[in-house]
Amino acid sequence: MRSLLALRRHMLKMGLAASVAPAAARAQGKWPPASITWINPFPAGGGTDVFARPLAAQVGEQLGCQIVIDNRGGAGGTVGASQAAKMKPDGSVFFVGAVHHAIAPSVYKQLDYDIEKDFVPITMIASVPQVISINPNRLPVKTVAELIAHVRANPGKVNFASSGIGTAHHLSGELFKMETRTEMTHVPYRGAGPAMQDLLAGNVDMMFDAMGTSASQIRAGRLVGLALATPARSAEFPDIPTSTEVGLPYWIVSTWYGLWAIKGTPQPIVDRMYAEIAKAMSLPKLQTIWKEQAAELGGETPAQFTRRIRTEIEKWQKVVDAAGVKLD
Image 1 (tube, rainbow, N blue to C red):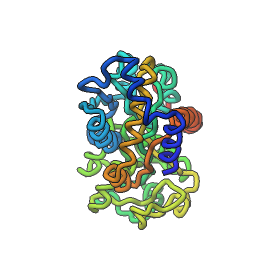
Image 2 (image 1 turned 30 degrees about the horizontal axis):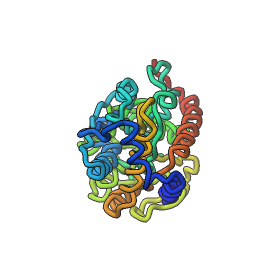
Image 3 (image 1 turned 90 degrees about the horizontal axis):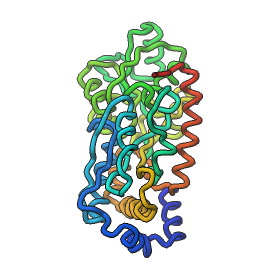
Image 4 (image 1 turned 60 degrees about the horizontal axis):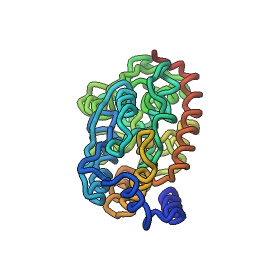
């Protein structure tokens, strides 16, 4: 809620509520167009979809146009990001990415886009804690202590799924391995959606997942959440202990999702989109969806979101270097 309050204060300071729409119209003629595309660089069914789709539907309703989610998965979200960076900056295309895009510069030696230079940060839309989700039919454990003992007794035999090499899901697992001095096998997928499908099907043992994907499965009893990577318990999942409680004080990981404009998009359009997201996030129906996923409501100002991206890039560089994760 703090970020939403900051967003509202920023809007009032700029006078957006009264002036953004006319300014955008004067600068660009008729905007919004009949259809706007939000490129999601992950397959459908993942955490990005969980938040992007209801938000896009609400913002589209407010703008009086259709916002289409275009899923373009591959290479830990870098394929879709690369394609989005090359789109025409006319306000018809935006990019809805995640923390993974602050990790990618450290993992991939050669990227044909720069998340800080080729995009304009608008706001974070949600942040959810990571959770250790296991398939109870695959792993005979009920606590993190039992999981660690089981993995140590079976080095390399336990596997964990991720949304791709170099994503937060992957590096969260690597961080866990380093902290517990255990060895597990990483199984990367093209996104959290396909990874979750295989976890539920019993083809993999576990995931270091974002609650946006796991929450409904844990509630239904199809998965067991062993620990949340947070310093405090979640009100929505009070029975799941924190990483600190289970003896993993450094395993504090969240997965956040955000919206960017393409570099060169006129500022009045960026401001208008930002204002509409703020309006949407003030609605109880969206807040309920976020709460159900144990998610923090987004709404950072563009300046705050820009600082978050820079801080996360520096943070994950250290983890990537320690884990030795590099791709061409």
